[in-house]
Amino acid sequence: MAKTTGRSAKKKMQILCISGPNLQLLGTREPEIYGRETLREIHARLAKRAETLGVDVTCKQTNHEGTIVDWIGDAPKKFAGLLLNAGAFTHTSLAIFDALKATSLPCVEVHLSNPEAREAYRAASKIAGACIGKVSGFGGESYLLALDGIALHLRNTVRASTQNALEPGR
Image 1: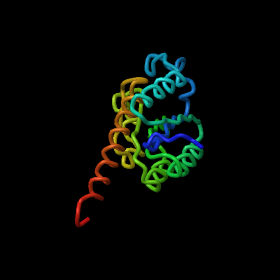
Image 2: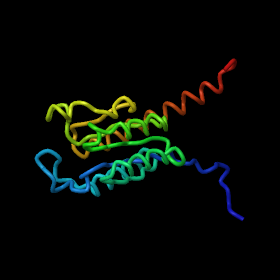
Image 3: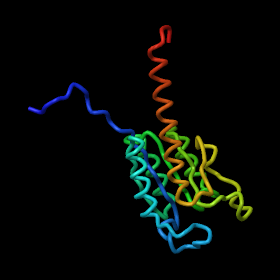
Image 4: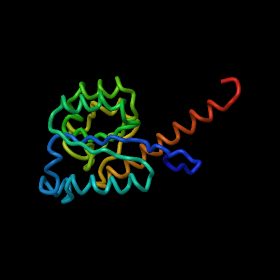
């Protein structure tokens, strides 16, 4: 029989991090814009930050829009929130926007560079309207800042719903 300590094991919040097209090339792709850090290195730093925040993060990368849509659509089964660097799909994909809206999961848009400071066509985000926030322009640190933000948002949401449930007349 398993020994219990009187406290039930607290399940960690699960967060999904999705990186889109060409991000597998980080470290060598236009380092003057995106830096020299690889996506693998960013993901390793995210895992360490997640541990300090008391959450779990699962990181995925694909070059395919439909795969991103599928991952977002499946996310509510396991995840409480999303980090999304949709890459160039940020500026073109209504399908990703629709998937985000359909799941209603809180999502933070992430970018290594500052899209608004680059080419004019990068200034418009098709997915921003389905996100609770955006972090951009800090290189790989953008992912960590986004993780901090989504973890805080999720904790505040849980705290608020718990408080509301405890208040009489609700």
